[in-house]
Image (cartoon, rainbow, N blue to C red; front, side, top):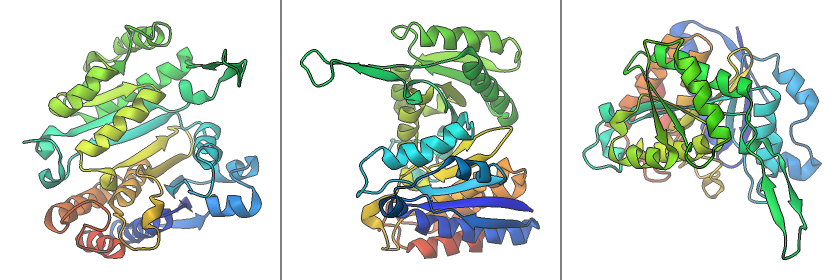
Length: 349
């Protein structure tokens, strides 16, 4: 019996979560597993009414769950950064979800913006460090508001934090068992403190994995190769900010935000799974948003819980729907409503 904490969130989040839960229910019946879901209201609407976001007592309750299923956060009536920091980053840091896992996989050539690229050309995974770096929130202003103002943002990297991320990436690459190649993506030629640590740690850990081929690419070169030769990549490991940037490009080459899912992973604790496209408030309530990313996130959640057959079956159902049914992956252009797309995935399960 799995306990799933559901955070529908803002905008179209509740709509795509509803379809994800529909598919989760169908997968449970087919693969004979049970779960119970409880909804948590950590939304912009609640914040505007109460001033509350995620509190420490909420974190303690969430630690009792098997996984967290998140729709989206972000409300146009709330100043940018408040909900994102008070919900998403709060949960990531408090639950020590130190890995952000982003599969980049093309399901249908019809939706790829790159010329002549096929599904076998775009199939890699980005392992992003999720708890340190520039997103740690460390820094200061000096002489704020004057013409001599200085803003300092610190990239905070620890050997332990970097090593556990890199080691996770090596283990994931070995388990994935495809090209068995791990690429370190960084900026060693300019960021000579943080990336010296990353590179030294990467080379040290690599000695424990002689079966894995390793290489290195600067982050700017990585974005270039994503577009020109995405088939070169298998697993990529990088820091918090670079990972945030390159995974959005990854989403575009796999077909767009409507198909991109991710996991915030604590291998020893509670992990959280979500579509990465955001709350898309302009589509709220119109029943036109693409739920496939949220459904893929539910599939990732199942694999993480150990229900690998169920998780892969959800992904295969999504692939069938993307290839045989949808005119587009964009909201309002799919040829089906949000609910109908969810029904199609269930039928293909």
